[in-house]
Length: 137
Image (tube, rainbow, N blue to C red; front, top):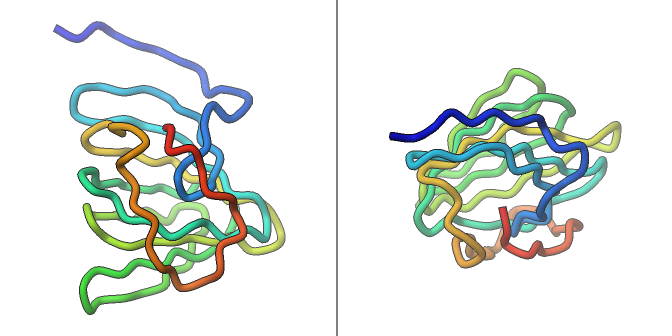
């Protein structure tokens, strides 16, 4: 049996994602994990694809755009508070903020983030300006 866990959102980032965004690791269970991702104003993430995990993102604050490509399907969607989207396993994705503030997203990863070899850097839609991360989440 899994015991109860409670936490507070860390004040400072606890990791850097492979896409270059700051991460505040929250909690994890056998079936998934939750984290907050933040990309500074005017920044563009590194484009990546995940080997084994899927994610659901919910935009908490800020504005930006998300590019996703799966086989021949490709789209760019506006990111603003209240938008929720999926990133299925293997989808190429990249996101960017607008210059007026950082973008903060709650991300749920299923199964939990396995480690630094999970993300594969791919060619994206925009030139990245966020540094390639350590792969930790």
